[in-house]
Image 1 (cartoon, helix red, strand yellow):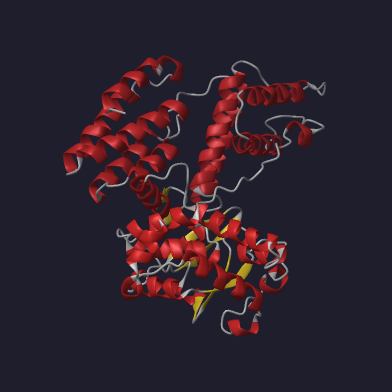
Image 2: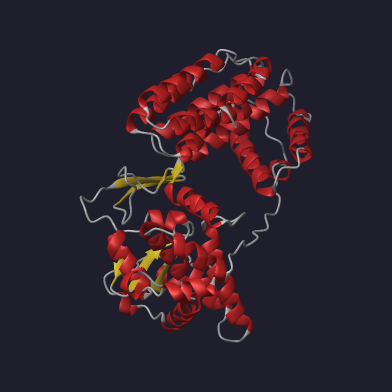
Length: 432
């Protein structure tokens, strides 16, 4: 969408947002990015995304996240964007109303937690957006000191409002979790006198049904044929070991032990030992960071940050996924699938693809549910208890992965992925 059109639409909503001066700020941001950058198209894209997100949420963090995803910004442009975000981070008007003032205190508390690395940028953005929405909805409504159910009715009415918005379950649950955290904080800080007696019911979550979104083997081969070596390496690791982008981002050289990769999954902390295909090993060796090793801090929810030295980094020497503000893997995969002409898929679809193939093996009696859970590093896998805790990274042979090795060998035979001297263009092209 052209910058001019976006700005015009943004201006139409300024009165409701009580922030008319941001129009001039955003125009200045766009112009400043364009003056120092050779690629004006990317400069405009960054400003467009910033306008759209601030217009919709008033959330500078999310604006920066999507702007960075636009890609192509030079270090000078990135510095300008960061400065703009910092200068407008507290540009909201003074809170009016009792609820808005409590929300402001809660948000200040969360910013302090962020500065102490106790929560990540993504979580801070979620809490800010959710509590802002609650304050706007409340208007002049307020919490009372009376233990007559008034506070519970206020929160129940807001729950009904959220349900009326027809949010996806995951979005609704994000708001519900944020609200529960906000209300408990307000009570602990004596901002409200009474908690709802059935607070768990008021903020009960909606069941989320995770729907796999796999690619076909033919689509995988089409993507592979056009992918550059770096993307091929990430694709191979994802298909070979069921890795998400974040798992690849925090993969370290110490996790590669000969023919195997052994590491805890980022989400569940369950570790698993995956046999590496020959093509996977070649691509890791070819594309891994072989220059100066860089150490970064990984911030985990409600846990101390940990240091890690990633096997892969971006050309700008940053983590592939940086505190959920940027996702080099997801962005490059998006560009690749657009080039191939595949719609509605994400990088996580590669994990879903291998999972679907294993489920096919289960139906044929060639694998078990346990095999699938072990491949995915689920907490209910038979090997999870043996891998969790003290993981033997020095002697991976002490972990018996014979059954999983056989499953991974079958996946390798199905995909038939080649690279470099061993690549047979006729086989991949013909399969497509």
